Amino acid sequence: MTDIKLNLENAVIKYEDTIVINDLSLQVHGGEMAFITGANGSGKSTLMRGIAGLLPLSAGRLTRSAKMSYVPQIEEADRDFPACVREIVLTGTQRKKKFFYTRCDYELANKIMKELFIYELANREIKNLSGGQLRRVFLARALCGEPDLLLLDEPCAGLDVESHKILFRILENELANGCAVIMVTHDDSDIEGIKDSHVIKISDGRIKI
Amino acid sequence: MSDLLALLSYPFVIRALVAGSLISICASVLGVILVLKHYSLIGHGLSEIGFASLSVASALNVPAVLISTPAVIIASFVIMFVSQKFKTAGDIAIAIASSAALALGISISSLTGGTSSTGAYLFGSVLAVSDGDLIFSVILSVVVLTIFIIFYNRLFLITYNENYARSLGINTTFYQLIISVLTALVVVSGMRITGTLLISGVIILPAVTAKNFASRFKTLVIMAGAVSFVAFIAGLVISFVFNIPAGAGVILSNSAILIFVKIFARLKNKK
Image 1 (cartoon, rainbow over the protein chains, first blue to last red):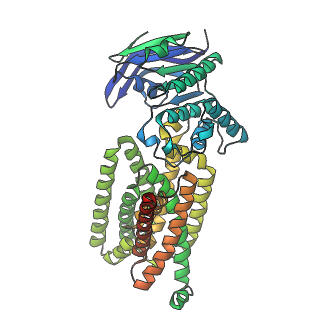
Image 2 (cartoon, each protein chain N blue to C red):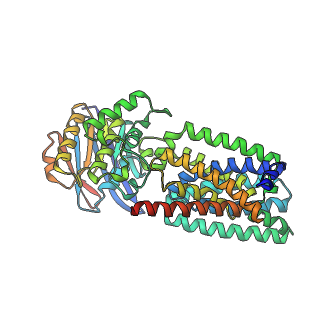
């Protein structure tokens, strides 16, 4: 398989001077899904931030698709901003080198919001959304970037059964379209639900595939 | 009332009115970004550094703008970088840098016998607005508003979530630099009128006031600009009526509007 979307070689990632990820190598191809599991504090989010380019590698090499979208964990600061759902979703299209949104961007955002059942919330302020709704907004924002590498940091936390089903249906579509997905999860049932997936367990900064 | 209208016949009043209004609007527009990004203290730190640089310029007998503009721009970028990188340490760095800069400025003024101009720097003066300042404020406001319109979507994203913007491959440092440079220019030009001690209030207060009734970023920017304009005019009137420095009048009117809006919002929520 040559369609490599992520290639991480002997990566070392530090967080505040502590080595969290130590000598980690990982390759993910288009259409593949990699689940990252491990105990709290084992470095799952640090790894995701490293892959997303938000933390530098202290050693090793990272090659990844330029069309990457990252769905981080929700922080309190994410709500305290004067914006509506549509405005946040549209920001996902900003990878393109242009300053103003086009009609295509609005149409894409509307289509994705409908797929994720948040279209009726398009004009709602983000501070008035539930945790599950905000997760769907962040996923919609990521999909607006039309990614071929999708990073999801605990996207299922706080999701109800219906939202969980919607998320996995969308992910299966993305995988079928050749997108590679890397997802942090604590739930084994998530892993069992996807066929072409491999599981990366992180322990003491190292992985076991 | 007729006395106030008569003031409009003085060229220095017109200069202060136009330049001050434009700088106030620019300051409040940038203030929205600074408030939302929790960089509210930056304006205060920059104004103190501006004061020190003005004292140095005065001691060296060179035009103030030549020293204070680059000094404040560099300081602005360093402060934003430190604040972003080290979070809490950023606030401490601003506190240290601003008090050290104020002490340095006062010391230089004392040693070089420039204490008479120190008061004008600290508290501002409408008389200090020259034709050059007026032209500079017009150019600055055109630049700030044009940049804001062109880069609006980028600034929105970077203000909301800089990390997400970086993950999309956007050069956030470039936009940080733009915000730093514009903030520095607003501080340098504004401190002539409102004084170095009060310019940070002109940057922050309108945004904080507008945040109480604006639910969208765009509305917040427009409302902050409107509040700042009204507060500046009211402040200038207050300063003439009560014979107090213009900067003090502007901050008092801004504070009064904020208190009024807070009370109104509280009463509205109780209903």
